[in-house]
Length: 319
Image (tube, rainbow, N blue to C red; front, side):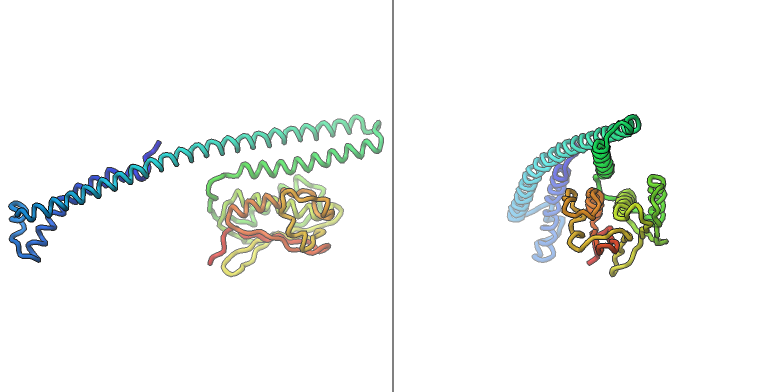
């Protein structure tokens, strides 16, 4: 285990304390020669009087006592720091075990969800003509629930895989990042007619991996608000609020009320209360978690039937 700060200071304190003893003797001789005219400095050092010897002895005892008390305090502090470092290491190991288990569990659930999707597709392909309409409805409901679960697991896995250390700070061309996500979503959903309006020359300084995941979740959320039979558009832009940059993602979807805007970021929102909202609740909750890690804020504004806008900042506002 590496030495604590207090352990490193012990030897320094001892050496500096020993160096103070001859320094105190020389200082006493200088003061005696300059202020009290007690003779030459060399004479006082080499041939001191009994009074000077007593004063210097007291000085030395005082310095040694101060060294002892300081070393005793530092030794006690070093023991506490050592115990704290050991506790932190144990906590780090426990946290890593939990994170690894969480990641493996999510990955296993994701694979299981994929197997269910494959099995459902094979069942429908082979037995579709033999199934009753009610049975088809139930199978379709199961497939939709499994697809929703799969999307939620994908988002959870992406959040788990984010680094737990301090977010990196690098220059990011947000418009270029958004174009990459646009191409990715276009290949994944070729049936959707959605126009992406991306403001050019948008550059910020933040963590690239985190900002990319935020934009991906916000774009997917905007697509979920746009009905599949409607030609929609999604806009990414930025404006300044004082010295702070505010980014936003706007869409022409079904929108939401002011009261619903406050519930959009709830990870376990009861979707039965808001029938007009997308059933996936993990996207905005995940985006909010990342934005808070970056020290920023995120909020929603919209109106029913008139689309909605998600605003976010990526760093604390300057005082």
